[in-house]
Length: 528
Image (cartoon, rainbow, N blue to C red; front, side, top):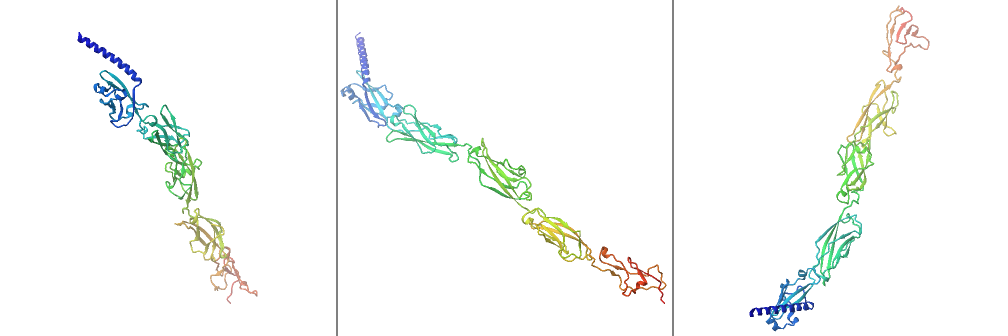
């Protein structure tokens, strides 16, 4: 009974002690011991003398147990039982303990046993600028169309700094760039949001990519900073027309070139990219439809080839209108003219035409008398169209150039003699100066007309005839015959008997037939 009474007395005093401890707690809670340390202090650094600050003497410490209880952060600190000194037991990292809280306070509960006393100690961990601002990414890529208007805004991810207060990010800086500027807006406590502002329109053809550096700076002394590379890819807009690589295109083409012959290849470029820079070649919309049957242009390569007949005599040159267009949604195009000069080939023989001709030429014509006029024409040009004419046979005729171009005269070059030759076949040859030369021929028939330039000639001179007396007056006594080398009337002969000046003539005895030369006796002869 006595033992149970003693036990009840002990429990009652413990309850009283507990109530006293509660009162002490509430008293000390309003006036607790508070220490401050900087993070990153070395292990074993002194935080403070709790016993001294609480007025606990060393004797009490030796007779009563004094310790830290009920704290998850207990491993951070160590309490010396002998002198009541509070030490740092390991490295203190404020950012690890308090994360991003501005005030980092560690509350410790110390217990002094027998009788129970509870004391509360607050340890504030002061921030040290031991972290640099860090961006979520090392590199940020943005795609911006070159047609984007100035004033466009692009939000960037802010940098994070585990430090607190003034050691967090205080400002942002953007590397120099003519097209962008930086704008920073406050978003809540200690939070700054950076924006890129387009201040000058982009031109992809001038610069395809812009590289910027964004720097975040904290408020430490010295300040710490972190950077992020911002790569801005300028997206293409079809704002450029194709441009031909040459100011003028010209080509030389031989006539009669076979279909498929390459005339020239045109080329255009476009400063845009993708479909906006892909070029399609075509003939101009106003190009003559006839030319499109002679030439063809490859829409991909720009090669112009022959598809029809190239005839210099039809066209000495061609002007072809071509067009280069891109494949943009709204395509841009550029026009150009290609000049094609056709080189003449000797593919046409001279043509001979008789423009004037005499049916016959008198044999007594003077040397140089014109027999015929001819014109010679060659459709080729240059040496291929330069023609020379000559007569292939050895005849008393020659060709003389006329005062008019391509006109020639066939003239006599020596005296004619119809009785020697009355008909000529002249072969006129026209030959050009091409390589190899081409020629043509024309046959002209020339008749030499008769002139009465020959006298009749008796077959015998003199004639000796014998007649018998008592001749028959009906039958011819004898006949004479004469011939003339001339022709026609000039060769027609009539006969008659000449009389002498005294009127005596054998004609008194004889008579001659003027047509055939038969001589008749006008009377019978008497030998006696």
